[in-house]
Image 1 (cartoon, rainbow, N blue to C red):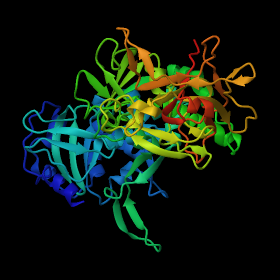
Image 2 (tube, one colour):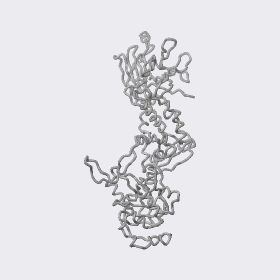
Image 3 (tube, rainbow, N blue to C red):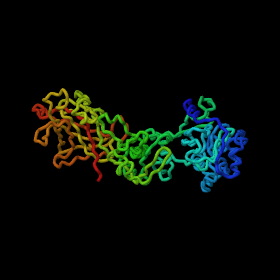
Image 4 (cartoon, rainbow, N blue to C red):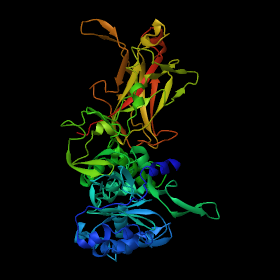
Length: 581
């Protein structure tokens, strides 16, 4: 709080005698130019002083009287009474002649709807009022209005406020200070306000944001008069702010002091994209009722489409690279795939230019309006699913089978070949099995691959174990009776073998460090397709619905003959979406 008031002191000046050099009517000059008894008379409140100037302020006073708001949750008050209190404010009064008749008709309407009261109060009245007394003297400043917008106050001979010229300034009153403007202060929405208030988005994206938004008390900026019987503060003037779990994730797009660029499809384009993918996010397996499942489906689908829409321009300073608010620089050194990065964003096909049909200026950035959802589905959500075996701890049988985590952080051959630079090593007798949980899949069809590391590249493994690994694989889904992946050759399960040697371009046999074994039909070479009946995307569960079982099928004879090894170092299991084209 002290820090807040210290910053205010830099722009709060003792009111000085002043001379006005404005070109105006004789009546206007009689009020302001040289009459020091008027300019220094502080016996009148702000609204009394405003009302004194007749036809140039009548409609502003009428607007104050006819526009209501709810104070402290239980008191209905007009803005006229609000400015007639003992609280100190500065008001920048727009002269009547600077505003159109149509706008004045809206502002002064005595029969406003509830929404009109809110809009006129927020976007017009509060946009011309600030707490405390702001004298226009010798220093430029930034002033925070009751609307929460911040505007530049430029001092000197060519003084302006929010780019609007003064008619006159520094008129002291009993409870504050008045300035008169030769124009109105334009209200620009925040990114959040545009999304939630623009009519075309009210039935889809705007409604979604509002569902997960609440108003919170800003305790630092609110004024407290005491506490109630329960020890809770009593606010005589409360300031609220928007709190949303979505803004926690994607960026505080309601904050005035931020600077975002947002890639936003038109409402029609948003709805078309939503409708085209929503079935992939079907959670109807849930133990909860359909209302919960539908809510989860709607929440995840919208979240997916929002993924890389938001860019914090305070940190995006490069012309050749842009990162969305979900980018994590730690991914650069983790060995995982780095996401949320866009090269050449300002190029013809860049994220800030492709498909853009309009630019909407906001108080905390800009919205680039696009004619389609401007991202690559395969990059955002329809991605290859990786089951990291070292993370998804497998159920391994028999229990005597040994397993451990192999790390490749310092192995310069494998550190960039192994996902996450770690893998699961399993050493067991013939017939061991490992069942892995698979998460983050969508509803739909997948090809399956098993990534196996050559034993030759594992430190400490004897040469007699530098052999291929042979296995079968099956997939099961909770609640589904039959296996959803069960590769067969006739009646027999298909055995798959890792590749450890290959012939290079020069005809030499070389070792293969890492091999991806795709689960295919041995006769046709076509992949066996695993159809996953429901979605498990982005949902935390103790036990995943989808499981994949790998069984070592090396026989005792094959082991003794040195054909295969029962040791396997499995990096991960891949689920690659099948293209719908």
